[in-house]
Image 1 (cartoon, one colour):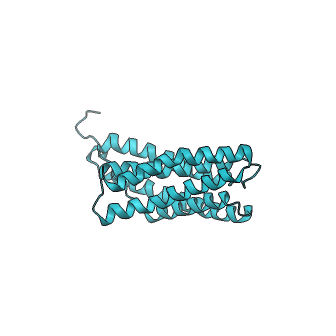
Image 2 (tube, one colour; image 1 turned 45 degrees about the vertical axis):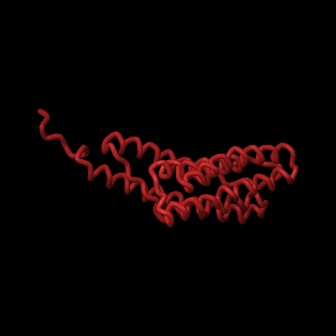
Image 3 (tube, one colour; image 1 turned 135 degrees about the vertical axis):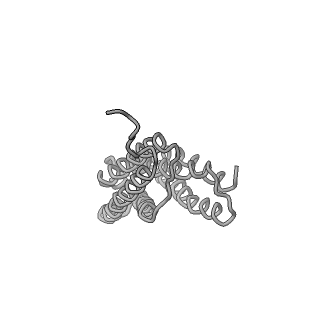
Length: 194
């Protein structure tokens, strides 16, 4: 259990705190809960960069980290996007296309990983710049909604995040197809009788 993995696990534990505080704010309107949810979301977002920095600079990359890090990101961003896509009495709503793009891409990645693992018995998933950029804009969008920025600004960043989310889906799809094409299991079986 490396230090980087401990930071990632802390990030996972911050997700239910963020969700709880946001739901309590939505029911009560007490700013204490909103501020606490902002703190939890911001701490989790910052820890994403911290654990990556520790893993790279102190040679703490691990298989567990390769699984936990994207899982922590997905839990944080998907929960925030879903909660903020509904109509709220106190918070601006995030456009529906924002959450649809995130969920569609993540479901495509999950199905792709299952298929590639079944065919190739090994999956190589490397973060690409569109995915990292999408994550940053997703975090900014959610944080702006929590800080109650005017809807037009929240929507603007949500649409930018959506564009990069779709672009990252295209990159992941191309990388997945490349892995399948390079696998011997994808070649036609010439030993079978027709």
